[in-house]
Figure 1 (cartoon, rainbow, N blue to C red):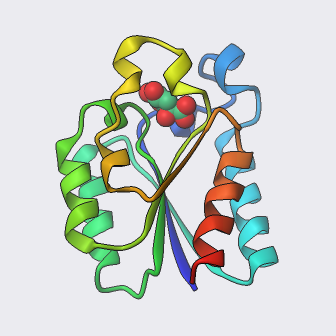
Figure 2 (tube, rainbow, N blue to C red):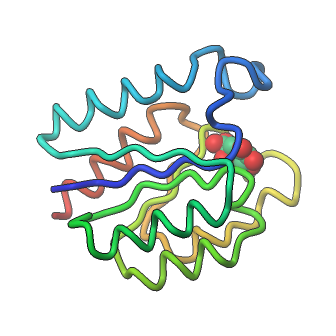
Length: 143
Ligand code: DQA
């Protein structure tokens, strides 16, 4: 089982950005948790991060033909704006799960809209790094 983990803008700034919301662990620490989880579940995890909407669309499209079985996606701010990422997820028709470190529904009103979430079969929010673990378990258990 091969999972693609997609992280959107500013997630590379974990450990620096708004620590009261996102904590003080950095992006490398998140990648370590993802890699350890993949090893435990016996699956492959390809981790991708970009600050650019089009690059995220390109990576999701590539998943159509690179053997990816499922996508875990935290589109970050693009969650609330990007119809292009929603359309890319719909286009490739791979099982996808949405993750947010924070509880987006308990924050500003504009964070309650999730375009990407409309193409996802499950969602884990407000659990910090554990949300990625749960999303990966969800996809692996369904394989
Ligand atoms: C986020 C929540 C988004 O609203 C925000 O723009 C992010 C991170 C989260 O993981 O909690 O950058 O996706």
